[in-house]
Each structure stands twice: as C-alpha cells, then as structure tokens.
Length: 448
Image (cartoon, rainbow, N blue to C red):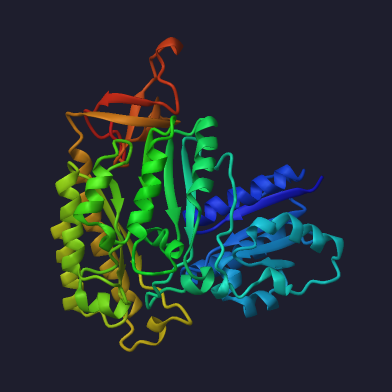
C-alpha cells in the first residue's frame, strides 16, 4: 500500500477535483497522508491564474521532491496546460497530467509506476484542451468541507478577458448533465451535507453548450438546475458561485427569489468600475449595466449580500480611471470586495498593452480599496446587531478563553454561539441551523 499526499492550489473547482482524485485513490487502496509527511507519491493540483500562482505551483512541486527525493511527484492541472515547456524541463516533476484527465489519475499513475524508465511527458496526459467538448465527470460522496458541499457543474470559459489565461488552461465551456448533478447532491445530503454551493470556471455559461452555443442562455439553464436542486429533501441551503452581472434580469431575479433555500449572497464579478478599463479588459458590460443588475437584486431580495472582485493597476489605468472605480464601489456599497493587484500574465493580450502601471502604484491603490471594503463590510454586518440570525453551525472554536460554535448566515456573515457554560444536553449541534439573537461583534469578523 503506497502513501499518497495531495496539495491543492487555486479555486473551488480545483478543490472539488482534488477531492475527486483523493476519493478515487482511496478506492484503489492508496493511503492518503498529510502533505508534510514523507509519502511515496505527491500530487499537486496546480493553478495558473497569475504569475504568482505559477511560482507557488513550482515551489510546492519542488518542496515535494525535497520531502522525499525518491517519491513520484505528479503535477496536475492548469499550470501543466499553460506551462508545458517549463514543466518538461523541471526535474522535480516525474509525471504531468493535464486538465480533463484528472478522472484518469489512478490509471495514468499505475501505468507510470509500471515503467519508471520513461520520465518524459506522455502526450495523452497533456491534451490540446481547446478541442475538448466533453465534461469530465466525477461523482463525490464527500468533500474536504464538513457542512458545505461545493459541487462542480461547469468547466471552461469562452470569455477571453484580456488579462486571463484560464481559457487556455481549461478550454471551452463544458457543462455537466443535470441528472449527474442531482445524483451527486442526493448522495451528499444522505452523507449529512446541508448546504450546496454550485461552482464552475464560468458558472454563468452553464448550459450554453447544450444548445450548440446558440445565444447566451446560461442563466436559464443554471436556474433550471437550481430549481431541481431546491426540490431535493435534505438540501437546506443553495449558494451560487461567481456570476456575470449580465445574467441578472428581472426575470432571473424573480425566479431566484421564489426559492427560499437560495442564499441571498451574490458574487457578481466586476473587475473595474470604469467603462474604459472594462473595455480594455474585454469585459462585456458597462458600469451602468452592472449597477442595474445590483439594483434588480435589491428589489427582489431584502438587503442581499453582494460581493465582487476588483483588479487595481490594470494596464493604462489612470488616476482618473481609478477614481471612477473607487466612486463606483462606494456607490454600490458591497458586502465584500476581493481586491487584486494586476499581475502581468504572459500569453495574454494585457501583457503587451502599453502603459503598464508601476508596482508601487498598484500597491497604493490596492491598499485604498482594501480600507474601503473593510468599512463597507463592517457596515453590512452591523445590520445584524439587534436582530435574530439563522446560522449553520460549522465548527467549534476557542476565543479569549471561551468556547463557541461558529458558522455562517445565509448571506455568509459569520456568527457564533457561546457554549462555554452550557451542559451537554443544552448544546447546539454542529451541522444544524439555529436562530440566535445578535448583540455585538465578537471579533472583527464574527458576530455573537
């Protein structure tokens, strides 16, 4: 029996796929051990969303070889797809497996182990992913989360934003069949999961390949799937991953609002509040259209949690364009803003654009937006003080010498129940939803 250690980098889709590989290896008799332990095989599910992600992927692969020079080190995923030449030259890597072959991890690994003489990349492990049209199906029975099940329903992206290499790493849109999603979610609820989070590389495109790419109908397919999940007994909450603002219309918002299990927590990708910058980014909406989408959500949901991503220092971003973005963020008033400094990504259109912004300017602008989102987040969470909150309890945590059960509300606000002096018969149970009166902030991020 061989010991296998897995390490995941990047997004929730990667995390789902790492859980899938772990499950398949366990089923074949491999023993899973922590990554910092000596193992016979190290598998790193890599990320390539930025140059920093590439570097982190290389560092983890090299660390694996240092932990056990005799081990088989396997590079998997996005970095393999976009950095093939670097991967081929990297002597720390024994085997590379591209996207859409993660489901074949056991077969590929055992073939390699049977013939350790061939340390070169095998063509079948690194496909030309742009031509792949079939979804890579996995069926998970559990995930690395204990109460919240992230369910991958879509892969690939057709958007080609000028800063992003993901379409080259993941290929074109491929959607999962509803019957496969429903079967997996039913199994997850039987295993005790109460919350389902739908995720994908470009979730808003779910289903467009079902219609032969004829028109933008992803929102309809995604809501069709969500409504079917809503009917499954045992599913108490449904959360949607990152969405494009243009799929939010009065019709879609009305359908969403008709599902009580759907969490009023919407992550609408923005990237910039300046139309000129959005155009250079090849984003397919204006700031005004984005704002209209947010206003639609606020008409159909009472104070929904709206979160977003913003890139600072995109090529050509002037002080005036940054000011427009900041003013737009203040106008929308988000629950949370994930702020990223622009990272120059080789092979993308933005990498060769003129007027690249100096690093110190990116840092300054990023700091300014992080201060803004910290204030807005406190403002949103403060709205719970004096009200009752329904919290899905997820973990036990000790804070300042007292013991709490901590979880999230439907709009993803973190809250806690003090159990320090409760008897065992009076203790709330993890993985259940409880209603608690909110009185104050326990920490900077947790209400109690």
